[in-house]
Image (cartoon, rainbow, N blue to C red; front, side):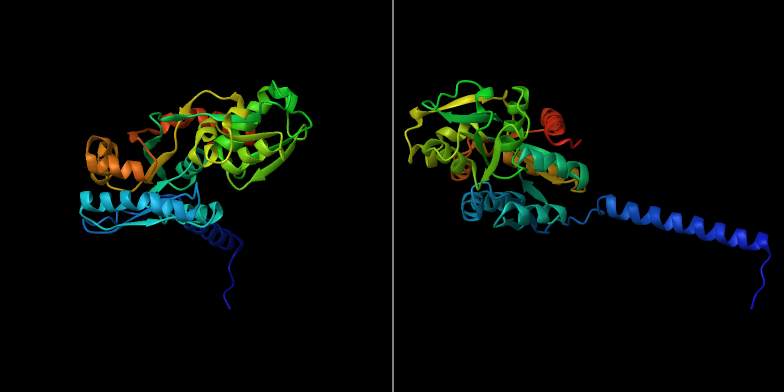
Length: 302
């Protein structure tokens, strides 16, 4: 119906191209940037806790913390966990949680891709650091990491387990062992991996060093028959992070209440139920060492 000249057609196509790029840029910004501040003074907060020791234990141990924060902040605080790590991580990706507790690998991914910023970290048994380790029986003739060549290693959790898999794999790499030099399998938890190494169904367990002396292990086996074959230097413990768009006043209030738990009898009861001795303030830089190890083992840069 309309006959356009060649120059007019070029102008139309150019305009369409520019408009398409503008629309794509706007869509990208909407997907990547945090949502506008929607935190009213009475709005509920959702706390997400990863199922480190299972869903039921997570809900039991952290419900008093959620109740305590609700009272201190003067707003509802709802606790959520998940039946498994995959479901929990789906909640992180959906940004369901205002305050979230997860492992160090979860955190650096969530910080980069889903706009979460750390405010605190665990202190357990008086230490706010934790070390990944390889654990073996003392009577298996395994005296150095290179002795694990050709043997089965059971890693507690999956490939997203910071201490039990990523750091443990780093220890193997530093000893000159690469994937394929040993049989790699996974247990449902670090405790299961340690028990398997004790009973001989695996030659070694990948776990945090502190798990060897946890009640669930010490109640089941004689830990004197086990040893830490190798462990990495202590690094920042499990983090707590908030959505980046959370107002600074609320973020500081949350951090303050969590860090102050250790200073009151009520707060110490909350910590005891959560199997913690304190919560300590933390910053993103505390997890730079984790980033280096993750890049070395998994090839992922955060």
